[in-house]
Image 1: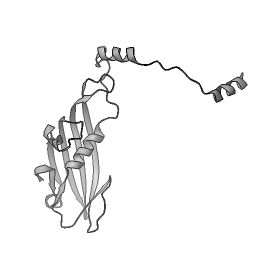
Image 2 (image 1 turned 180 degrees about the vertical axis):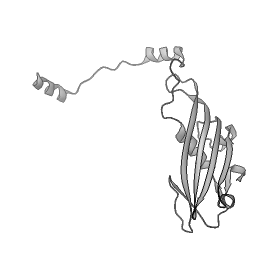
Image 3 (image 1 turned 60 degrees about the horizontal axis):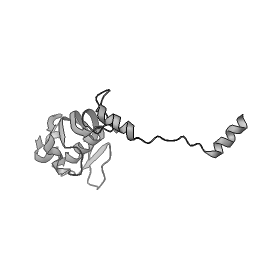
Image 4 (image 1 turned 90 degrees about the vertical axis):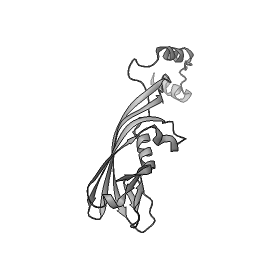
Length: 168
């Protein structure tokens, strides 16, 4: 059962298998004012399975991140994302910090907030190089970049020049 603000009920998922789909829309990113991501249409599929005393949690993202800037032409860009990440939920009374694979929860904890985790997973699903597919960039902008791009002179290191002379 998913509560408001992307809270996951630990009581419900600890009973056995669990499956929940949630939509991550534009309003999700309003709490993250520092994010360049504002417009999305993503479905997050959250699955859990009880394994002994631990719970496995799988989060799959599938959808689109819209209105990003292309690294080449600075035009609007929509990027298709898909990712699947697995976690283990471990109950412990100790104050331990969660990591990339394990999320620690207190034995008496009833809810787990997934909002920041979902935000991070969306961010990590976006490729580092954001660029339109072939021939989709603005030709006008690409021509301007070529026009004003400084031509780099090939400067060689004098130490290597001396070694090249020995080779001759």
